[in-house]
Amino acid sequence: VRVALIGLPNCGKSTLFNQVAGYKAETGNFSGTTVTFTESRVRVAGEVIELVDLPGAYSLDEGSPAEKEAACYLDSRDVDVIINVADSTQLASALSLTLELVALNKPLILALNMVDEAARMGLHIDAEGLSRELIVPVLPLVASKGRGVKGLFIKALEVGRKKDEKIIESEIQNAEERHLLAIALAKKFVTQGERRIIWRDSLDNILLHPVWGYAIMLFVLFLFFQIVYGIGKLTEPPLLAFFTLLTEIVMSPFAANSLLAQIMLGVLQGIAAGVAIVLPYLVPFLLGLGVLEDVGYLPRVAFLMDAFMHRIGLHGKAIVPFILGYGCNVPAVMSTRTLEEPRDRYIAAALATLVPCAARLAVVFGLVAFYLGPVAAFALYIFNLFVIALTGKILSKMTAENSPGLIMEMPPYRVPTLKNVFGKSWFRVREFVVEAWPILIAGSAVLAILNYYNSADFFNTLVRPITWLLGLPAQVGVPLIFGILRKELSLVMLGQALGTSNFGKVLTSEQMLVYATFVMFYLPCLATLAVLRRELGTRAMLTISALTVIIAMIAALTVRGVAIIFL
Amino acid sequence: MRLLDLPLNVQARLLSFDEVRAKLNQYGLYVGDAVRVLRIAPLGGPLLVEVNGRELALGRSVAEKILVELQ
Image (cartoon, rainbow over all chains, first blue to last red; front, side, top):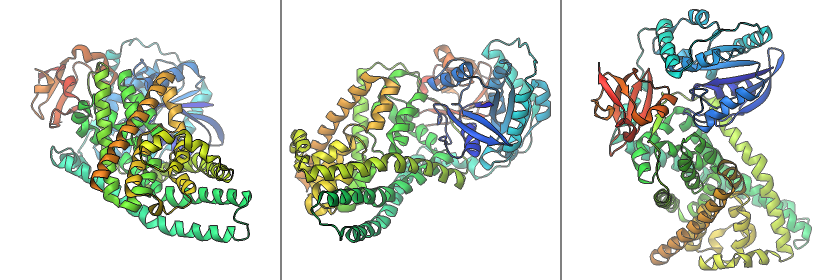
């Protein structure tokens, strides 16, 4: 049995999906988190079903690429039951899509999600009446708390089994009529009682305030930065010390100069780097990002930043790829799919690859913040924003703007559940552990072999023109090349390449800054290159890659110049 | 009058959308819907409006193309 979840953006489809399938689909309190479908085989009420989470769609008519994906899936695959997830607090809007789905004449269930929120707002929905009118089962649901989930799927299986031949000839053909009917239905079956005003309702008075809004935004981002740094700083040294000790113990029986010993050392360094250098910053970062996403703060940032984004030729919505980019550039590039114009997608994707992801955060923090202090790291981040803005300005000058401007759903604030925040962070950490870490360890071992046979020189000579221009030691060539695989490698293998993890001894402050700056901008990692190609095509991928190298050179040389003058 | 010129917290009705019609329809906004401007971001920023119980942010370039009538 194949069951598809469909509904408006941000109505909780992925939350419902994750309740049943475990955390497999990205969620967040803003529109367009899901841009492609996620499938999972799950066991519900003793039966195995193929559950599909589709991207949010206002309508099955073609709209943004994400919407097309949803419509296309329903069209092409054999879907046995459709569960239409609707946000109960905005039923008038949701029913428009429901009416469209009813006309498909497939087994359908309407799930009224967030009924707890609706109750708080004093909305009473006559589910039975609505069900009679639409001739579709209507069930209440609180997906975030798992309430009503089981009943919903039992009903779905029941509906799927029936396969009755009720053919409802729908006279409504156009969207406008559907919309009017949806509003009429909502009026008929939803009664507005007394609304309980709570703190969340007046939060926007402060957070979107023309002055305080910006002050708080800066404060929130700064605090976020400080917490990540604080936790990382606290956990990194003891972990490093532990691994140094472990390495000594493990290595003591081996002759230090044998190939085997070198490989062992490389592997150990790879493991240590993952645990001691990357995770201390990655874990708090992802937890914090998860909270910000689920609260619904990101669209507020988009609202506040819209005016600024226009200066770089985009509108506020494009801020979401940027913010996601701080976690990982891959979802960032994918999220550009929610932008309607191809030009906007191209610029947003190009700029998103310049955003220092969590892996590059590890480089900046592990090198610059650790040795030169948090202010230097913060300054690099500000410099990064400046470079992105300038690049955006230049790119947008080169392409004609045709976007009508910002149109964005502003979700209500929601209280994030611990389960979801941890589930989401674990989902993302696991990606690092499963995909990046093995490459990191293997890369470390390969480098050890290269070192043993002195062939690292070959690679170092290959990029020597760049490293020479930047005033960096020749040995950083290999970490830079391996950094294209995974950005963490640029830090991890730096230790291997320079022969010590105490970078303060072998690199000057200027070199650390220049190196971190170059790593911040040059070439996106392999995974990002792959999505760039998938989203925008090979040509765009190549031009963006070339662009990042040029930007990295200019930015790193600028930092070098400034460092020479001031340090 | 243009949506852009509508004073804060005054109920109005959407009258016409000009060239942004298709785009707004996609977001579930149609002629005849009740609209209210909740706040306006400074420095040429967007408007926050309420339509059918939902809140939407609309850039000024969008809001100036929308005509509304007071109720």
